[in-house]
Image (cartoon, rainbow, N blue to C red; front, side, top):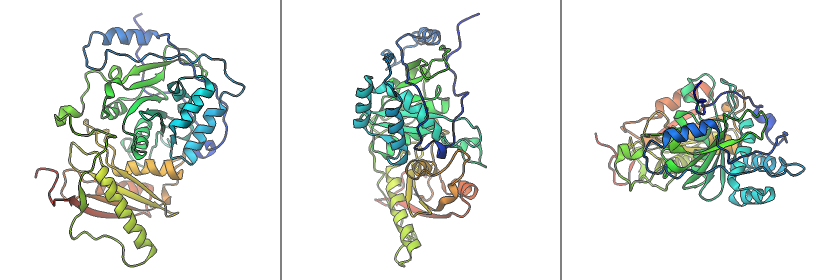
Length: 401
């Protein structure tokens, strides 16, 4: 009948509403990660061995986690995820990860699938009703959680994928590299391409449930594969930039931007709203300077202000494949979910957004103002949008006219 199929992209399990999940201990079992390769993995390894690709010869192995569970093997993970998603901006510190691993007698990487199962309960999928979680481990040892976020009333391509959420969370925390990421199911092609913007992406470990394991419980085996096995013959940053010295996604950068002369910058009236807008403008400019826009030279930053006066910021994050690019609004929505708990399983709560301040380069090849206005009109119709132009410190453009 032929060999079994390769791991498929997402399909098939549900979740619970985000608000109901936060802070409540749901029962779960300890993950099991084994060394035994599945038939699908063996087939994939035979196929990829015929392909000579830099960075793909060394394949991270699966590690064992078949230890006898303690009386309550879930308590450690439940507490860590609850704390991360309520007070720590979807981040589990390296120290806490090491402590959890020591308590369980596991390698820190073996905890990632367990973090995923808890994080996915906080997903916001009003359209698909399919909850996706992700947990990315940084070079620092910290873990960054992610969930899928779908925006009601908008096209499906306006969604935020869980892997994108986790990567942007790592970016916000100042992480400079990722070592591994675990996901609810095999990452879709969109996310594989997005993660290909990372330095050393080819060897980054991707941990997914083993489709050859018929187990229905949490002890299901997991595969540990390098990203290059899931994205062979990839198209990436160097195919467009031809410059290995340029900083990649997550790496430190400063785009050298300032407010353009003549731009109307809020502030000075003493009104509370005006002062908030002025602070939002400064934060949006900071984000524009940190934006990852090597392909269009169109960096942009955005700051949202909610009904509590809290600000949530984001910057544009481009992909060499273009379509997986995240707008500064999408990155700011990740921050709003991570720091203010905005959004719920039904796609509500975006109405809490009262204003958005976008800073982008006038005349740049890519303009975000129209898209941001359209999205806000749908999910937060009362929100005001301020658009402020910026330029390079030298008064020059970053692109060829």
